[in-house]
Image 1 (spheres, rainbow, N blue to C red):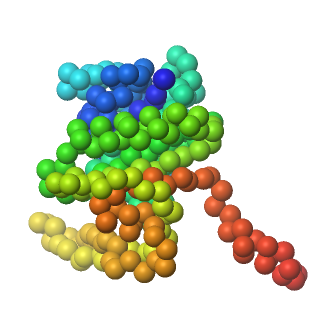
Image 2: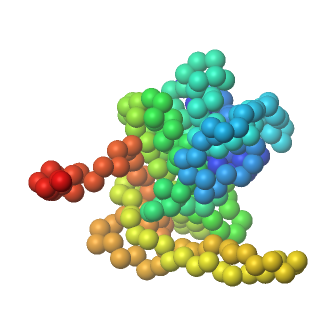
Length: 251
């Protein structure tokens, strides 16, 4: 299988190195990833400036293409211009930090996978909970097995799978579960700070608090110690509301 591997933490991040090591053992892997961290960049693309790239050697582990752009840029550039042939699958990750719940909408990792699907290639986004001494090698092995199971099902061109791996403490993960994305909002704060020159600035922080979903979601599953796999799609239409709106009187 030919795989396009990308991420949003940058081409020199430990997550993409671990993922490459696992996938390259049995697949043809092309790496096209941002030259620097793009976390929180969502599905931004570069349209007002040139999109540049260069070949780089990554810590003696592999050679790839570093792009001065976003994760979505990387996938566009790879599929339209760089790769000698179309990949069978796009893999984005391993991200340092979960992409569950509403964070999916902010995630460059997930956006790269979605861009692959937009361009007609099934895709998998992989994220690992942020914690001290993150074990990317073990996470890569877990992700490799899940990717193999997904590939064995012959996913359709526009299908996207969001994989979130819990903290890899002793005994975890407990298994794999399928669950929908939570839509619960985060508890955010904007801290007012002062830099060394006396200028005021703000620092955004926040996380999910107690879970209030009535059904088991990706947030519940990962907190319980399971790997969660969530199928995503490109259509953001609110179907029930759409039907109600058909009866509205429009001036």
